[in-house]
Image (cartoon, rainbow, N blue to C red; front, top):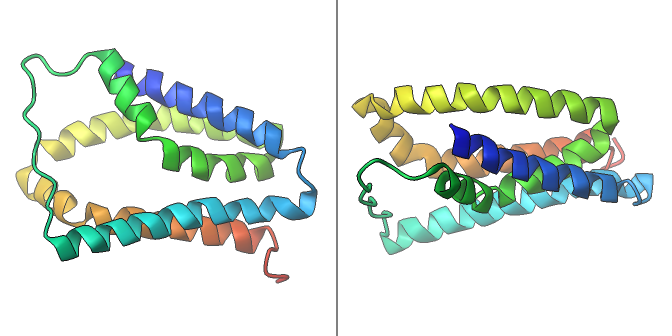
Length: 159
């Protein structure tokens, strides 16, 4: 859990800094930041489709005895957090300072929930098998939905 928090804190720090940088953009450009999670979702969908066509199933990695160190977990969490940063920057940029603070607190609380849920589900073979089978489809759909939501709610389509 410590590694998850270290990695996620780094992700939040980068996203908040980038969101503050985005405040220098003209207000009309902010909704178009939703193109970032949309593009990430489309990229993930393309990769999942490509992997499916090539038949690569992502071999299981052997776990080392004692598990990974907190710094190893933090590094992997941060390295895999590019999509999180891509989603958080436009959300934070449109939420303002107060909204950003609320999001950050909620996200940090939910890291613990996520860790406990992950442990729970990973110890349930039927659920773990289903997540391993369908997770690569769910992630792109969520990213695409978030991107579209930012674009629509920001008025990018003139609605």
